[in-house]
Image (cartoon, rainbow, N blue to C red; front, side):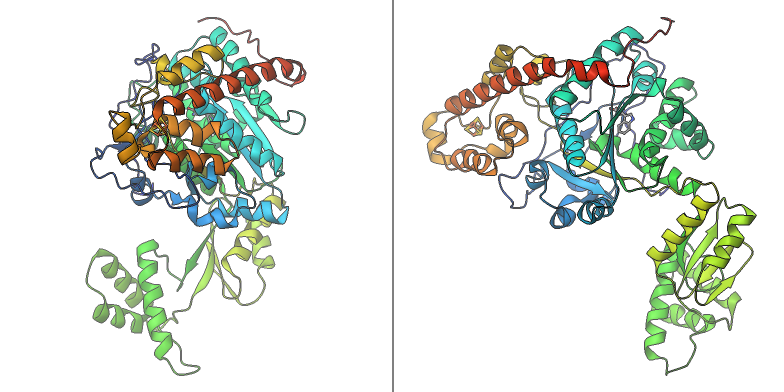
Length: 547
Ligand code: TRP
Ligand code: SF4
C-alpha cells in the first residue's frame, strides 16, 4: 500500500451481528467551522483531541480536518473550487472540504465530456439530514450531465451490521424515496442493490483477484474473526465504485464522508492493478521508486542545466552529483547504486509504459501505437516524445481494444460531518442528536428548539460578545440545509450571530420553523414520487431466507 494507511483504533468486530452501538449511519464528531461566505474556514482548534481515525464501520472521528490533508493525502477542495462551474452551496461554504482527483471530473463537466457520479447507502435505519448531503451531491452532478448512480449497500448492511433482509428492504425504500423526492431522475440515472446486480458481483470477483487478506487486514483491521461475507462486501464496494465505467471508462466522482476514504483509496489501487499498462515517469532503463525518481529528477535538472548544447547527461555523472549534493539516506544510496550500474547510459526523462497485465497482442499493439522516439524492453516501453497524459490515454485505448476495462482512476469528494443537535456526535442511537427525514415535522421543530447552541449565558453577554456561530449546531443547520442556495441568508445569520444582533431564542425559532417546513415539504414529495419508485428497475422485496 501507500504507506500512509489510516490508523485503526477501533477494532472491527465484523462477526458481531448485533451492531454494538446500534447506530445506523456514521457517528459524527464535532465539525470545525463552516464558512458563512467564500472566506477561508479556519480549523484552528488546537485543543481538539488528536484522534483522527477513518474507519468505515467504527466511529469515524475527525477532530482535525487538516490531518486528513497531511496524513491521509486528501486534497483541499478549495484548490479545485475555481475550476468547478457554478459550484454547489456545499462546495461554496466549505462543507465539501476535500477531494481526491476531482479535477478531472470538473474538467469533464466544463468540456461536456462524459462523467459519472455514484454513491451508496447502507440501509440500516432512517435516512437523515446527513444523508441528504450525499443525495444532493448525486443530484447536483446528475443535473450537470453526469451518469448518476445510487446503490443500496444491502450486502454490507447484512454482513457488517447484521440487518435482516426484511429490515433492509424497508430502509432501502425509505432511502430511495428521499433521493427521488429531492430530485434524482430515475429515468436518466441508475438505481441498484448490491445483492441483485450480476454485473457488480462479477466485477467484485475480478477485483478481488487483485487484493489479498493481509491488505484488508491492514486497511480495515480485519482479523481471523472477520466473517467472509463482510470481506465480500468490501470487494463489492470496490466494484460499486468502478461500476459506472463498465460500459465506457470515464471520470467518476464518489461523494462520501471521509470515513469512506479507505474504500476510495483501495478502489483506486485496484483500478491501477487491473490496468494492462502502468504509466510512470522514468529517467533511465532501470526501475526506480518514487523517492529515487525524485532524486533522479533533481540530478537531471541540475546537470542538464549546466551541460553544453548536445552534451549528454550520463548516469555516472548523476551518481557523482547525488553523492556530493544530497544528504545520504537509503533512497540516495539505492539511486546511486543503480546509476553506477548503468554507467555511461544517458540519463533522459521519458514516459514509461510498464507491462502489468497486458496480453502479448496488446503489448505489440502498444509498441506500434507509440509514436516518435521510443525504446522497447522486455517488460516496458519508453517513449521520449509523449506527454504523460497522452501516454495514459494511449495505454487505455490499447487496453480497451484488447478486451480490458481501461478504468479511469475514480475520484471522490468529502463533506464534513455534522455536529449532533445535542452537541458532540450526531448519532442515530441518540434520536435527539439528529433529524431523520421521516421525523414528524413537529418533532423536527422540537428537536431544533431543544438543540444546544453556541450562544452566551445571557442575552446581555450575547449582545456584547456575539454568539459562537462556528461552534453552533443550529448555525450548521442553516449552512448545511436550511439556507439552501441562499448564501446571503446564511451569511446574514452568521454575521448577525457573531455581531451580537441575533439571539439564540429567535434564531432557533426561525430554524425550527424552517426545519418543520422542510420536513413537511419533503414528506409530501416522498408521497408524490412513490410511482417513480414503483416504475424503477429495483426490487425491494428480497426473497432471501432469514438465516
Ligand atoms: N460503505 C458505504 C457506507 O457505509 C456504502 C457504500 C457501498 C458505498 N458501496 C458504496 C458508498 C460505493 C460509496 C460508493 O455507507
Ligand atoms: Fe447559534 Fe443562532 Fe445562537 Fe448564533 S444566535 S449561537 S447561530 S443559535
